[in-house]
Amino acid sequence: MNSDNILQSFKIFSNNLNNLIFDKELVVYNPIDYASESHGLYLKKYGNGQKRILFMGMNPGPWGMVQTGIPFGAIQPVKNFLKIETTINRPILQHKKRPVDGFDCSRQEVSGSRLWSWVENHWSNADDFFSNCFVHNYCPLAFFDTQGRNITPEKIGLTERLALEELCSEFLLSLVLAMNCEWVIGIGNYAELKAKKILKKTHVKVGKVLHPSPASPLANKGWSKMATKQMISYGLI
Image (cartoon, rainbow, N blue to C red):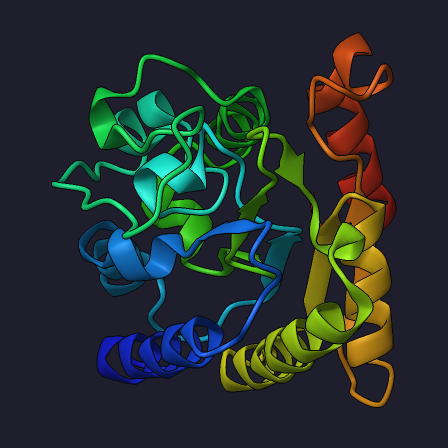
């Protein structure tokens, strides 16, 4: 897959996501749309060619991809490790408790900081990592309720969820096949289960690493070591 192809495929995916209709009580952010410049740089720099491993998360965090347009996109790792920093536009509808400040955001996403620090420890630099790996979120949309609370995809209404999952599943399958991935590593249980369901009729193997969220007591006891152990068990580190 070359940069033109991957950019076009994500653009179509983003447009399809924008056409979905959600409950009016939900505020929906699409970072691959309003942060398309940053996300496009990510795809151009790191989305080319075949990838042995696709690491897949669930959906954007409010202090990560929502701000930068990049999966697990904590500000400092995106700027310093991925070497991406650009203007971030804002979604048309924002919740006042979930502002998009782009690279001026003062909050650091713990999950993204942990993930990219771990990547740097094992692959040294971004080019080495992305030479045979890629990071993608199954669902690129973020959802907030009227109080500004983060709503994960499995908690939205059934009809809306099924329409969303149909698009996300079709895109994941096409992405994995286009990149000729051997493995999809779900970052957390949700992503692993989705990957297993979608890829069950393919040659692609599915594994999991613990999600690095600070909401996980296990992750707070040494996420990096546990993720490494899990990857070693698959023969991938």
